[in-house]
Amino acid sequence: MTQDLKAADRVDPATPTAERCVTSYPARRKYRPGVVHPPNIPGVEGVIDIHCHAHEGQQDPLSLAKLASENRMGGLLYKTVGPISSGDYRPGLVVKKIVEDLHRWSDAAGVKPTQCWAGYGITMDNRPPSLERLRQNIADGVVGVWLPVFNHANTLFKVGGRRVWWDRNADPSDHSAPLPWEEALRCGYYLVDDRGRLKPEIEEILRVVVDSGVSLFYGHATHREIFAVAEFLGRFAFKRGVIDHPFSPFVDLSLAQMKQLAEAGIYLNFTYDELSPLLGVDPARMYAAIRHVGVEQVTLSSDAGEPLFPNSAECMRLIRSYMAAFGLNEQELAITCRRNPARIVGLSG
Image (tube, rainbow, N blue to C red; front, side, top):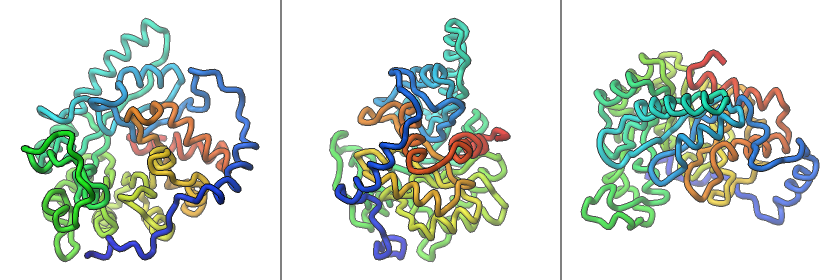
């Protein structure tokens, strides 16, 4: 087993309830930003969510964009949008249609439309990475590229996956248990070779990303892969790298690793998904991690879209409110929710 699969140094971020209430009750009692009037979503004006989901079976992307506009959000970066399970996956074209529909609605409603951007996952359509498709999607206007996520070997090793992803004859509803590492490698994607070096095809993809000026999201990469990608991109002084949900079981970074990667110029994108009941990260520990790393290389996002989550706009209110309650001030919230996300989507900030 490789070094990045060992868990000896892991600190469980899910604090036991009896201990968590000691830190959570003072925070919840003192945080009083004002009365909430549903369905209005206070506190998200100007906020940019750089990680939301809106593909089939999840939240509707146009409805979300309308809600974000009504609440004066700064923008939405759709990590997934439209159909991804069949046909030619072109999220940039899907988002262009969403923007057209949003502007027609906003003209009639008298509401300023929020900005919308598309992301592209190099294996999101469950096909091997392709330089041709990558360049095509960048030409379509995507602003962020994701390395493998649900079909990464690391994901299959940690939580399993739908067997139909690697066995076309499987029942589409059949979800496997976590796979042994060797089987996960056979069924999923992995970015490095046996010596821990990036595979040539991955280096080519990273070069296209660098040359195109879009952002690079590390997906569900293992520690070995994360540091290999970081070292490679460091040669080009690339400053738009993002590591999603550092507390998730897929990424599972220590505080020391978070600090090291932030000092290398990589953004750490903390998500509502981590705080949700499905992962159960203690918000006090997330806040402590942000304090340890420093807000200059931190963003907050939703990673929402599934029906078990609130909508992404509400998730942005929630994660922003949690971090405010535990101690981030307005200037720090502006950095993590507006300035840094703006830089990632290619705005001046």
